[in-house]
Length: 178
Image (cartoon, rainbow, N blue to C red; front, side, top):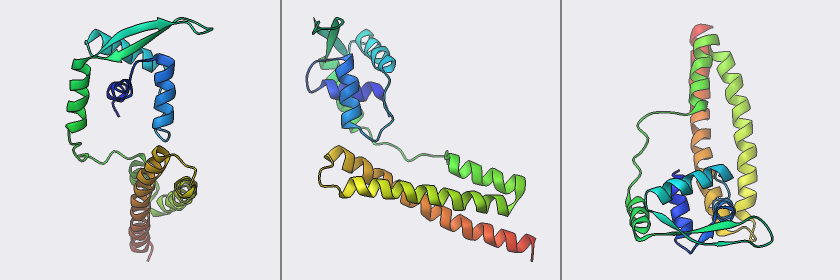
């Protein structure tokens, strides 16, 4: 995820200061990794340096002075270009789950991989239950439901892979220990 582009998107709705941007990020992308305040301000600095945002005033509402930022025409153009870019499918497998299973097979053979896969399947099933509760709760905001759908489909794919791999590991175990 591009934090800069997400912040530009949030600013497209109107000027916000750093604290409001962080809060808006965490509310509108509830299942995404939270963005740190330092990351917000560092990203705003780069966006300002690149002419994609400008300051839109300062306010001091019972606390420290806060600078609001607004997106420039160049920033809107950059955001539009980013939104139009198609994300290419990942060319490589870069999953920690895959790496652990592959290494377990290499190091200790089928049994350790099997034990890991069974435990991982249980963790995935627990997370699926949590996400399904979010998805089926009529009070859940649309952003939460969309994030839950996204995560559920990825977990389903992982679970299919875990099932297939458990079968392959069982076959390997039978070959090694007839």
